[in-house]
Image 1 (cartoon, rainbow, N blue to C red):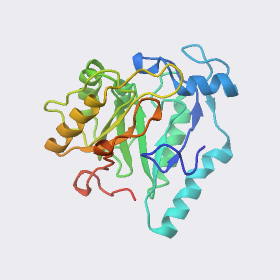
Image 2 (tube, rainbow, N blue to C red):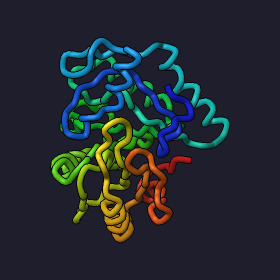
Image 3 (cartoon, helix red, strand yellow):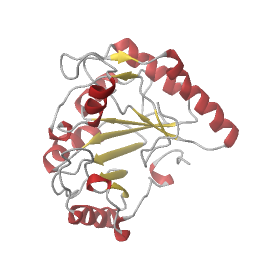
Image 4 (cartoon, rainbow, N blue to C red):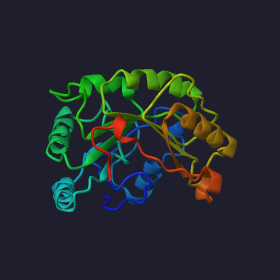
Length: 247
């Protein structure tokens, strides 16, 4: 869950628990909710839905990935969590503490922690966070200008080796202005009822990132249609922006 992830910007996906709730327009067609409706992992979705810790066997997988990384000399990227939110208020604090212990025990992995709740990050960080752990990249989803203008200023105040923004699903144009994240992921929505992303939004943001020295990663177009050749830019943060660049 899931080794060799199909998500283009990560190597593996790790879900310490499953369950979440909608917090903004980006969640309207939530793929995790749709998948849960199909597979029934947890009882209900939303504010009154269940949060279920995944199996011990699943929790051992990052240790296996770290062992393989030591042997290969590479540093895989691990997206945590695709079916939940690490900074969800309804998640037991003990689970989050155990997750931080696991992250701390696997310095060979670059953990990409993406949230729609950046306002919760500072009070949910582990002791000894300091200027940020060298293997943790912190990100927030910003589907439009409104959410970028609210969430990015909160995220940038939290120390981290990499601050990134997931502009996915892109629902309207986004302008960085003087903001300087380490990394921008851009993507259109997929699945039933996918809302259309104008390619011009991606092109404009790509050009702004290039001018500002911000790494830009074009993940997908609406409905996973082919990415135009001029938009097929898939960059990661430079060594100057991260203590250890992921392989």
